[in-house]
Length: 323
Figure 1 (cartoon, rainbow, N blue to C red):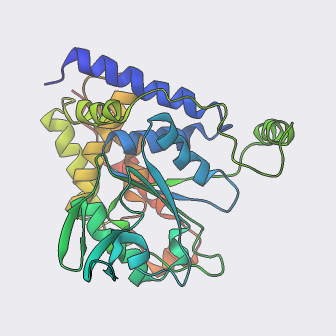
Figure 2 (figure 1 turned 180 degrees about the horizontal axis):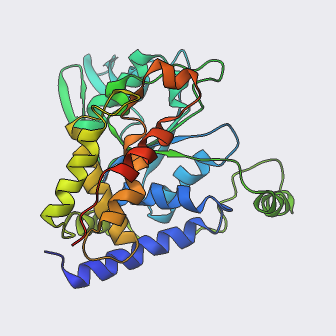
């Protein structure tokens, strides 16, 4: 059962984050909403878009706004797993091996252009994302809490990219797409970035530290306690199971998809001030949760259909509970 006091505080703090993001990110309101919803649900986020659309800026905004420790890892073809999680090294003075922790030991890890590294390196994040821990030379070390991976990737059609393994994709709660700004938004961006500014520096001067790390954890906790009617739970399962035998979908979402969709629907309700989950909360966020968990048939891909097209069609067909 939702605590009204914690719900109100969490809703207020989540919207403070949204307002704060708007101080430095022009436009992209849907992208910001989906990012914050995934964070409130306690999950990791994959942001996809062509270079130059503020993907990295969005990730840094979260860490700054919540006073969280953050690190940016630039993924490259020669990046090694030990460059991410850490490694054991021999200390000549002590005549013994010591463990040097990698950059993954932070609250917010920005995995920049994650699909420019091969699968071996990408998989270094699997244990961290799922178990909130890493193993170095047989020793298990817990990661700081909260632990959030915000990965950015370029469209896979671009040169020099590697497709993420399905096991890796499934660890991301949401896949958020970021598109080109409108002409008016781009004009505002042009005026702001080039005024009294040297080069193309990421300007975070408009941001404030509006919440604490503890507040971020409280947001995630409040979201997890939002009421969900059994009929809405059944609706979630119907949507996800429909992807497994839907015409045009070769591989559907697994049970982790149902869990993710329910968690994200709770966070969507929290952002919009609902103390219980409605079918609309589920429907509005379902595409972001499922687009990276389904694989289309080759025929549809050749015809130019996207997972979003098929999922949106599916959502219009699965009947939502009316009471």
